[in-house]
Image (cartoon, rainbow, N blue to C red; front, side, top):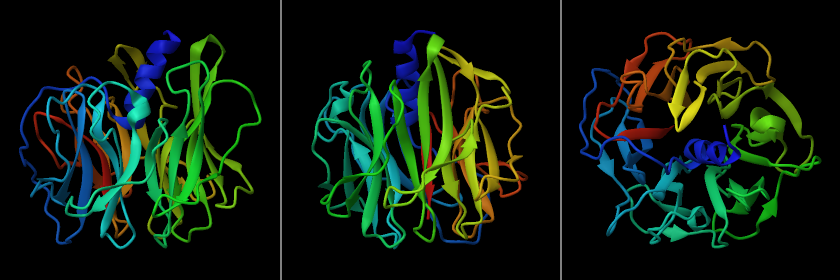
Length: 336
């Protein structure tokens, strides 16, 4: 696989802004019954264009928060929704009014939970993505990726306050080469930030691992090798994540790569357990607020067409149920 192809595939994983499923509507289908009133924000991908939607925990009452605007094009739009701790705001990554395929247009925005009063927080002509709120709501961590798509990639995690001010670089790389950090996730007590570090190795191999670091930039440590997309359980005792370690199937998007599965481990990285066993591509895990369930994205309904839908399972991996059933890609669930 060429380095350029790897960049394209990783771009899909990182910001969900590339080639699509079919264009179409917003069906509701779900047989999952739940008594809670929690909500899930997620990304809808229509022919490569991202939009932020919300739905209830049963997969119903789908509501679009961001709009496509005029002549939406591939690799543009809004992705990566993240709820503020009080549920009143949603941070997200977006190309704003830009309609061309240029990842340098992706910046961090925030809006009210009803989609109104959108405000842009970053403006640097650098790919900024994957926002994550601190538990006290005062700061946002995000992936800052200068040189994306080039040989000069050196992506890091950056912190800023909730108004977009006071930016500070959190992670740094001791080694030279193509490395980027993404997927920041704050521990519930605010003492640690987990993140994915992806390294391009010789022979165009790609390796990802989960690290943790203090918000001061101190005490960086490897938590889980061969892992990505970390998410802390609400009580901070567990971490769910994606891994390709078992090589259970493959997805051939442009070229073939191993499918992801969902795993869980203790917050110190021990006690790793695999939760999903389907040969489909499973990724983007998110915890329910009560810690009893995990939402995730899978193409198991139609692997040939990569029909990505949102599923939910019990925290032990049982009782897998499908929440969405649409003719678009439903991606990046964020539960609150």
